[in-house]
Structures are given as C-alpha cells and as structure tokens.
Amino acid sequence: MQFGIFSVGDVTTDPTTGRTPSEHERIKAMVTIALKAEEVGLDVFATGEHHNPPFVPSSPTTMLGYVAARTERLTLSTATTLITTNDPVKIAEDFAMLQHLADGRVDLMMGRGNTGPVYPWFGQDIRQGIPLAIENYALLHRLWREDVVDWEGRFRTPLQGFTSTPRPLDGVPPFVWHGSIRSPEIAEQAAYYGDGFFANNIFWPKEHFMRLINLYRERYAHYGHGTPEQAIVGLGGQVFMRRNSQDAVREFRPYFDNAPVYGHGPSLEEFTAETPLTVGSPQQVIDRTLQFREHFGDYQRQLFLMDHAGLPLKTVLEQLDLLGEEVVPVLREEFAKGRPAEVPGAPTHASLVAAANSAASVTA
Amino acid sequence: MKLAIVTAGLTQPSSTRLLADRLAEAVRRRLEERGEAVDVRVVELRELAVDIAGAFVAGFPNARLRTAIEEVTRADGLIAVTPIFSGSYSGLFKSFFDVIDNAALEGKPVLVAATGGTVRHSLALEHALRPLFAYLRAVVVPTAVYAASEDWGGGGDAFTDGLGARVTRAAGELAGLLEHRAPRRDDAEEVVPFEQQLAALRPADGKVR
Picture 1 (cartoon, each protein chain N blue to C red):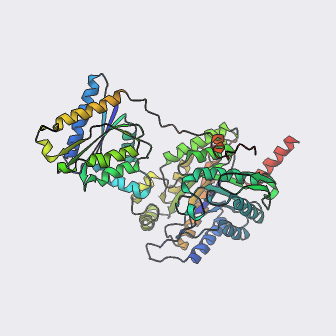
Picture 2 (cartoon, helix red, strand yellow):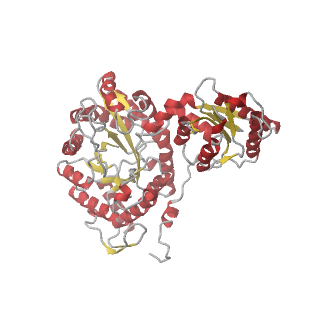
Picture 3 (cartoon, chains in turn red, orange):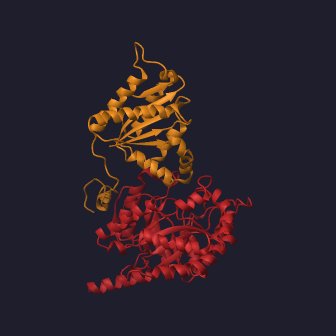
C-alpha cells in the first residue's frame, strides 16, 4: 500500500498572523514539501492543477519534473489533471516526457475541474464536462498505446497519422487514476479501462464515497479486470496532529474556521464527526485511518492533504515528520495484517512493465 | 403511504405549522377512508436553520439534515408550507429546497400552502411556489392554500370558499394523486454502460474509424 500527500497549491493568508505568502514562496514551499515527503519515507507526492488565483500550480509537469530531479524514490502524481480543458495530446506528451525524466516514477489522476470560468477560458463548456472527460481520455488512452493514431471526435481537431512523442517509457503508459466527488459516470469510466479510482473523501461524508467505490468495484469486475476486491482504490484524508490532541485542536482551529473551502460554516467538531478530517494525536490519526478499510475495503493508496488553509511551511514540515515517522509505519504494518494475498498493491512502473512482459510471453 | 410535511414557520406555535397540520390531517383522513394507512412525517425547518446554513458553506448536508431530506425525498407525497416574506417564500424555505438534489422530487405530488399577514400576498403561491416546484419537476395540485390572518376567524363569502373548504379541496386533490401514484423509483445508482457513453460521442456521419 502507498502513502503520500496531495496539495491543492492555494495561496492563503495565515489567519493567526495575517501574513500571505507570495506566489514564489508558495511554489518553493510546495517543492520543499514534496522533498520532505521523500525524506520522511512517504511514497507519493501529488499536485493539483488550477488556472485561477489564489492557486499556483498551473503547470504540474514543470513542477513535478523539478521534483523528480531532486528525488530518488518518490512517485510523482497529480490531484487532479484536468482532462476536460487540457488538450489530451499535450497531456500525452507532457506526462510521457515526465515519465522518461523520472525513470517511471510517474502516474496521474484525471479530474474534470469544478471552476466554471476555466472551461470557457480554455474554449470549452462546463455543461460538457462528462462528455469531455470521456472523449479526451479515450484519445489519451490510444495515444499512449498506438504508435500512429487516426482520430476524429467532437471536441478537438481531427488527427491523421499522428504519433505522440516521446513514446511511453518501456512501452508502458503511466498508470491513471480517475478522481470524482460525485459522478457515477467517472467510476464507470475507471472500471471500464481497469484504471484506478480515487475518492477525495474530504469534503463529503463517507457514505457518499462508499456508494461510488462500491459501484466502481462492481463494474471493475463486470469488465473482467479482476474481482471487486482487486479494483485499484485510492482515498484522500485530512489530518492535523500534535502529540497532545488538545494542542492539535487549539492550533488548528483558526485555520479550520477560516479555511477557504469549509470555513465559517460547521464547527471543527461537527466537521470531524461528519467527514474523515482528524485533528488530534498521531494515535488518533492511526485509528481513524485504519477505519477507512472497514468502510471501503482493502485499498491501494492513501493521500493526505497537509498544506492548506494558510498553514505555515514550518508547521507543515512538522506535520510531515509526525506523519512519516509515527503514523505511516504503523499504518503500513496494520494495513498489511489480514490483507488477502490476491489484493494487489498500487501499480508502479515496475509492476506494469512486469505485467506487460508476462502478457507478451503468454502471447508468444 | 408516507406523507412528508415541510413547514417553515418561525414562531412556536406558528400559524404556518397550524395550516400544515390541518392540511396533513385532511389528506390523512381522505386516504384512510379509502383504506390507505398513512405515515405522516413533519420537517420543521426552524429546527434545521443552522444545519441548512452550514450545508451551504460546507458543501454537504450534515447527518441531521440528511435525515430530514430523506424524509422528504422518500415520501410518496409532500405538503410544503411557508410564511410569505417580502412577497415570496421565506429564505429558509427556499434554502431547504436548494440543498436537495434538483432531481430528487421529480414526479412527486406536492400541495403548496402559505400564511401571511395580509390576503394581498396570496398570489405568491402562484408566482413563487408553483414555479419553484415546476422547476423541480414535481406535480403541484391545482388548489394552493393561502391563510391570511383574517382566514383564521372568518368563513368564505359569496365569491370565495373559506379556509376550511379550501383545505378540504386541496387535500382531496393531493389524496387523489397519491391514490393513482406511480411506484416510487428506488435510490439505486443508475449506470449508463461505458460503451453507450462512448457511442453517444461518435461523430454522426457513419464513417468507420
């Protein structure tokens, strides 16, 4: 099982000091956070993609390429890559290039994006969100698997005799996750291709995501990729820790109360009861995260949101120390207990190459 | 048969609740006369005001509000009653329906009613509540019941039925719809098979690709 962090990349004023980092500071902080993730033994760093203030990560492969050059083990991913408003040809090229530079330590998560104006800014219509996600991904999927592509669709100029370069490393495309907060169509899409499905799990109660994940597992089996239990599931989570749980609550409360997404609404106590947000001691985070398996089944990837709502970099790095040193080692051990042998781990470049080779030898 | 009552009265006791209860009782009586057992559930929006505001900010309804929403969406019929404020439904009333999925009331028989200080606002039922439920694709019964202050003390006149008669007429209309209702759709997740989603996007010129 893989553990990591995902970042929205928001520039938010620290409500306790009134200080707002510059874009430059925030971009550098994201890189520092990514490097720290590898240092403390996490497996994955994923960046968001946004095209409006107050968010900085508009160019994910640029940032991930830089992080790739300064890390050795970390898998670089996205949360999410906008499959609706990006040209699928450019996604195919950018991420294949990144995959080569990072020696395969790359996967990505498709998302539609929920910021209305971004669609027209990129010449699209938000009402076509699902059709865009379906058509664009169908093209991307072919571009990485067929050397020469003839293609015609609704949303993009046709292609005749097009080869996306560079070709994927070792002939194996990066693994793809599909993220969705509410659309069964996306769970169905992930199941159809045998790709991973990621439930953000942060902004809604778990029952909501249980329905989507159960649907995905069932349809994954329907399409013959394996049993429902073998489907590739990722979950988000959100935590803030101090050794003493009262200290965690006291320190995090002003950030929660003023957070861009849910601030000025429900209380911290209500939100922690209703959603997977956990504010407390490392042990409380361990206990809560282990419950995810009871609700969603054995899964492959757990990402935590750690650096948002104006938390200062120093605090985030302390959080990552606690996460990497005290929480994740216990989670690895506990999640391994009772995990059926037939439930796979998260796909990596090495595992995908091995699978492709064994498929080839069977064919030969 | 399940009947949900949504009432947006703010005082306790409130004339809005009083009107809701009279309508519910009249519908229950009509259905029971025809041998239907009726389970009436009342959703008092006053008790959910903070939860409703929280749902707007947080982006999802909390457990208490989810329970109330389910009472309404799973009911066979709905009686929705609001005080008239500034010439329309109250903000709280509209907010409750704003946090419900906009397809969740499709085809549901609804009786709309309102209370107000003056009878001059009675058409708010026709120009505010009826279009709201039309947008939600609910089926609103022809008689909408408005109770102004004076209605609680007087009967009808030569030109209009009194409150009692209008309650009875509206209740009869709702009961009639409920007796002939189509079976309620269950909440199972509906999936359009992926091939079908892909096929819908293929250019329509029939060329083989």
